[in-house]
Image 1 (spheres, rainbow, N blue to C red):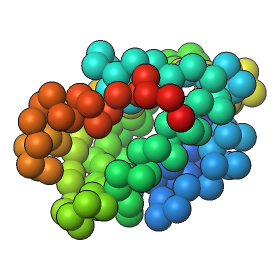
Image 2 (tube, rainbow, N blue to C red):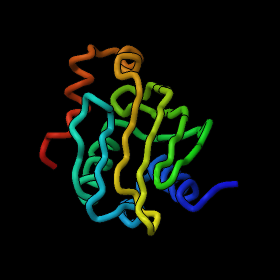
Image 3 (cartoon, rainbow, N blue to C red):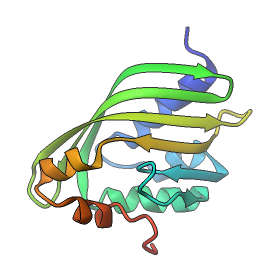
Length: 146
């Protein structure tokens, strides 16, 4: 049986993994003080719901056709764990890239996301798109001003 926190995360993933981002709906799913760390531990944590939305928009300038196959979901208290396979089409060469991702989400009492962390193999993705690990690190640099 899915609880409300798991349902909120499933709805959020459906929004984020779409052909076009619905920034308004994504923003509505986030607490005002939400945080996102796109690659633990390499990427800096993005602070604030508006900044999370800007980072999502920045990433969608790199790829399109993001799809998410949710393999497993589990929760403990206000924390939801997901295992999934994500697929994107890189805009610079139309190459499809697949990666296994573990996403960890903390939610508040209103089922708004307060902290979202992603764990995936950056070097695997770098190899699939034909760049070095250092180039991948720069691509995922969340400290770049919007």
